[in-house]
Length: 205
Ligand code: C5P
Image (tube, rainbow, N blue to C red):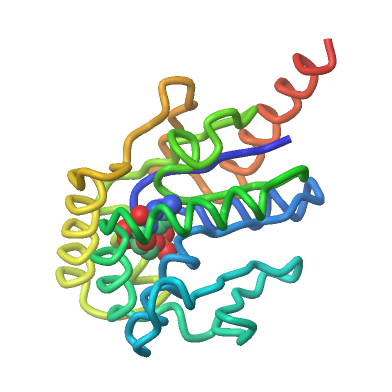
């Protein structure tokens, strides 16, 4: 079974995806982290053809074999990855890597274009959403910093992700829209696990 989770920045995709994959025993693939690793590689002067990015069972991101997981969460890479991900050649390369990772196995994959482009045949597609203010609040709780600046940075990324020509952020027509603004991570997980059970029952019948 393949599960696609898409949505805007800081909507809780990684929190949900990790727990969901853990509960189901699936591989978790955070494609945002792959774009961040690509941005790190570009920053280090690598050319696109030289970049190989993989995701391990333990949730590590490897850039050409080096574990870069701990280097990927910074405001600089938030911005750089968002800019780089509008490049169609970068997307083509990362989409190919993502499809290869998911081939022939159960996965929970999160990103912006998973249900629309990377895994259009996914059995369950979730579009995870929360208001901009709520997402900025959550990001500030996780990472600290100035609320207004965080809000503005997320707003800028939302705008860029949704308006780019190549694979813009948008719900797949068959995605379930899930508003998490007033829900705890546990409530969201429970709701999605119910959807998984429903899909499984339908697939088995
Ligand atoms: O989700 P995260 O914030 O880690 O993603 C970093 C950046 O990578 C996003 O701002 C977005 O522009 C880009 N991205 C993308 N397509 C994906 C995942 C992430 O364009 N499937």
